[in-house]
Structures are given as structure tokens and as C-alpha cells.
Length: 116
Picture: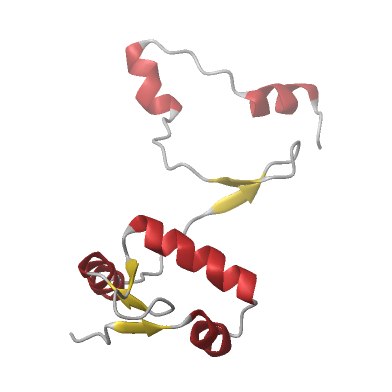
């Protein structure tokens, strides 16, 4: 994959991106600090992509987006979205042989006639 090595001037970037001068200068300064972009030695107001910048572009270009289903529920108290964690549920038939007592709340309701 070939990249154009010349990034341009701040004014070129400002016009191309449609961003204010201050934003372009701030972000360009960060890219220079990270070693992704460098001043061209022959012209003081022009910048070029470094080998690190080309590497980052190559890596960024090879990313693949995937779509995944994530079940959520709304917590009734906090009103926040909470991911549903998959976990194993045990039935009373599985727990009885190992001596774990299950309190059946529906049995109490049936015995008292509550909810009918």
C-alpha cells in the first residue's frame, strides 16, 4: 500500500479538514510529539509522514469491524444498562442429591393462597 508522504501545510490541512486553525495546530503538534509527523527540513511550514506514521496507517487500515449481540437489561434501582452475564443455573433436581436445600417461594404463595 502506497501513502503520499507529504501531509502539507497547516493551512492546507485546515481547509481540507474544515477544522479551525487552533484544532489543527494542536493535533498536528501531538502527532509531531508522537513521531508520526515531522517538519520537512527543506521547508519550515510543511510536514511529512514518518515511517512510524506509515506503520500506524497500515495497522489502522487493516482493522476489521465485527457486529456482536450483547444482551443488556435495565437495573430497576440505578436505571443503568447492565450486561447480562451468562452463567449456569441449577435446578432443584440437580441440587437435591448433593444436599443443597432450595426454598421454593412459589410453594409458600400456593399454600397461603396469595396471588390467586
